[in-house]
Amino acid sequence: MASASSGLAAKLTSLSKNNFLSSSDLNSNQILSLFELAKELKVGNRRIDLGNRVLGLIFKKASTRTRVSFQVAMARLGGQTVDLNPQITQLGRGEPIKDTARVLSRYCDALAIRTFSQQELEEYAKWSTIPVINALTDLEHPCQALADYLTIQENFGDLKGINLSYIGDGNNVANSLMICGAMLGVNVKICSPVGYEADFEIIEKAKSLSEFGSKISICNDPLDAVKGAQVIYTDVWASMGQEEEQVKRKEIFEKYKVDQKLVEFAHEEVIIMHCLPAHRGEEITEEVLEGQNSHVFDQAENRLHVQQALLAVQLGGL
Ligand code: CP
Ligand code: NVA
Image 1 (cartoon, rainbow, N blue to C red):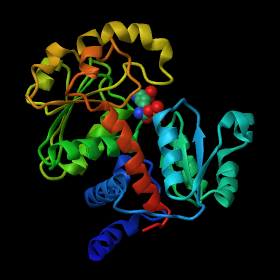
Image 2 (image 1 turned 180 degrees about the horizontal axis):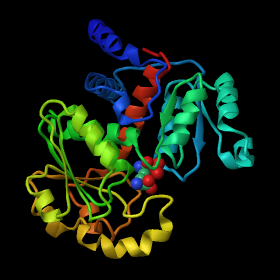
Image 3 (image 1 turned 45 degrees about the vertical axis):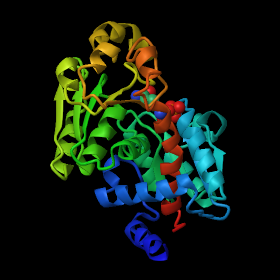
């Protein structure tokens, strides 16, 4: 046990004090080692006490899972979080990020940031002297992808060669699933309406990071996309910040609803995933979301375990 633990520590120490801004900030070895640690934390085989460390939470968008899982993760690590909602700090009155980041670095040990632009997140990282974590931007949701692939690994064992079909908007969640999946050997197919495909640069980046024979592809036909799929994943059609497009998108995406009929075209042992919150009756039906193949609450739970592992490593707790 002692040597297994120290082996894990050796694989993960390179992550200490590092930012996590994109799924591509971790390599496949680091991701798989984080999963090992997350699983140990999950079953109670390991306790890590960081001793009064503080994670600052700067959230410009709403959140249930990300916020609470970070809060609970820090509590379980013997630390705490402080809410730095821009509406109650000087950020909301225009204090520049370069000043805010340097000041917060003197008080906190890490920052988890949920905002719109990836550039803004990178600006925080540039001026902070503590690790910065992407808690969702318009471009990526890397903590979500970690929890998702941990959930898939728990279900199927080996991730290599797993076929994941994402049906819906080519958004932040799709982008991180592609990058992280590519490194883990998962075949990721992103199926969206024309004009709503995933970011071209991210597709190319994912392809360039592909390991263990992973294939990254995009398509527009949901029936074709789910054939042979062991994982069907979906997310809302209009993300936070796109509320005014909601009505228009409902029409455009109608064919991309994950319903029982679509699920029947997939692999017989297919699992259904959604990062939540879900819009029942839009991107997924109540029947599929609540069905026996649905793993949406396991995914939500794994946010806690994998982020606890990530924080433990970034804050030097191993
Ligand atoms: N999946 C996810 O990030 O949920 P929240 O928006 O509730 O944090
Ligand atoms: N794509 C969604 C994910 C929410 C967790 C959004 O950005 O709103």
